Image (cartoon, rainbow, N blue to C red; front, top):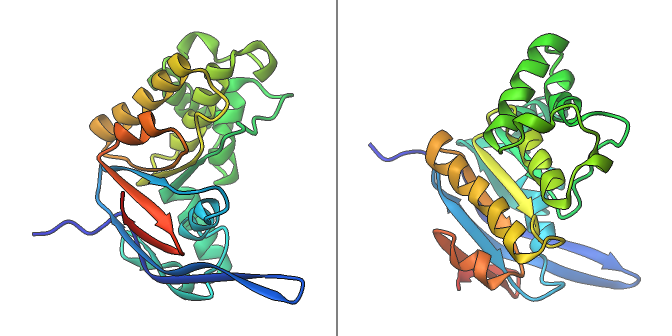
Length: 227
């Protein structure tokens, strides 16, 4: 029996208005992400990679086409159901970690579970496990300013995976890191795929990182093609 794709896109179209002009960003983009698959999306600056990631994650709506998360069409859900699915089945990591400076690493990671109204003690227990899985068991009580750049990004990854999502969407997750730290962060994604069967979609300008993924897709003229 064929596994259902974790994340699928069908004929995605998206355009924006710039003054009197309409700029077409996505023009029929399509993809399927299998469980435990790590896929890189590359392309020129301004080609629409971040827009695509936002549409795939349900943070922005396509003008046309469908995004399916484990077979469920985001466009056919109401806002509350879509938000719940996003919280439970998708994780997000960005170039800038967006950690809250007043909270410890532990409480930053527990935040998605608090949004789900999980009890604080249980949320912190799960957050501690997520931090341990990215090698930060000894840094749980540190604030973001007390962490290195790589540690902050790994904390952001722990926050993204604490809900045990089916897929993590990562937008230039190593863009602000040096080469060795970037490799260490990417190794976390590999471990996620191998141990938890979490799929990862990474937007990146880094050819080395892209080359270590299972597949590389190029976004060009609004469509995805094998790179």
